[in-house]
Amino acid sequence: MPINEFCPQIGKAEILSVLETLEDNWVTEGKKTKQLEGMLADYFGCKRVVMVPNGTLALFAALKVLGIGPGDEVIVPDFTFFASASAVVLTGAKPVLVDVDELDGNISVAAARASLSDRTKAIMPVHIYGQSCDMQAVMELARCHGLLVVEDAAQGMGVTFGDKHVGTFGDIGCMSFFADKTLTTGEGGALLVNDEELARRCVYFKNQGRLRRGTFVHEHMGYNFRITDLQAAIGVAQFERIAQTIRHKRSLCAAYARRLSGCPGVRWPADNGFGQAVPFRVNILVDDPEGLARFLADRDIAVRRFFYPLHLQPSLNAANCVVRQQPVNSVRLFEAGLMLPSGLDLAETEVDYVCACILEYQRAHAADARGAGTRDASSRLSRAVCRSL
Ligand SMILES: Cc1ncc(COP(=O)(O)O)c(C=O)c1O
Image (cartoon, rainbow, N blue to C red; front, side):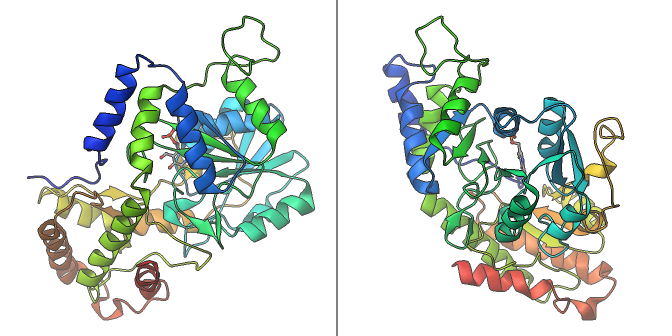
């Protein structure tokens, strides 16, 4: 049996929840969506959660509602999923790509500061791979320079900075509930807002310029960014076991760390210590991720490389984005990173098998077997994992 890179956990609770919604004969956005929005607002500790169709459109809607458009620049980290930048491009503004911290892959506030211009209107910290950005430094920079803050917390379910959930620091936080996220609705996203007036503007934007349906009078410009109660029904069932899902993710990471401790040339992304981390996937750093990926693929094990730096993306160029300082750390991370199979349905024997294959490859190929586990970033994730257990 091939070992998948990831698959969502859909069980009886999700099926029953969707069935209940179908039996209610309510398939568009309605009471299940309201229920999920309420549950999420309590969990995140923010005033309002507004569901939208996906994380990309959450970012786009947030930027639009905050008035970002042509002629504006938005600071975006170079090491993130493509959507962080494409959402900015869709508004007509330009993403300004800045380097990240090599240890945790999150935005470098120093690099952001160095790339500001008169046109910079906003900054988009992206909480990458399950760890918070340094939100104190980001918010300070934003305050000093009058920037709006749109947090990309697409991967941040359960992640905190201090004791506050990511996505609740800036003007608007954006979540994704795509199939590979810690909580999924299949496709889905949300806007996290702490200001009632801003929340109303988000609702106008997503609901054809009205606060409620049933009227053909549209007070503001708006569109259809609604979801369906069928998706929300999945989300409600997923939410009810969110603590268990997060525990499971952490223990999977710890299981890998135990088996790979001392594996030549395997390093771990660092724990930045900002708050509660929730591993997005089980990530390792090696000298030859492509070679190891091929070796594992030949053994029916699916893995994935890290994000390809945005400034190297064929579709992003001088016409639609800005690079004022050449990013270096995003390239280093891409050149070393590998995501291991991280599905919560993985059996212990499968984790054993994946680790045995990695050990076999690394013992034969690691450039500096003696250096294993000694680089500064290496041992810190193990500590993070243990701390989280
Ligand atoms: C950091 C980040 N931002 C934005 C998105 C976009 O979310 P969606 O796939 O729901 O559109 C993703 C999705 O994986 C992501 O990882």
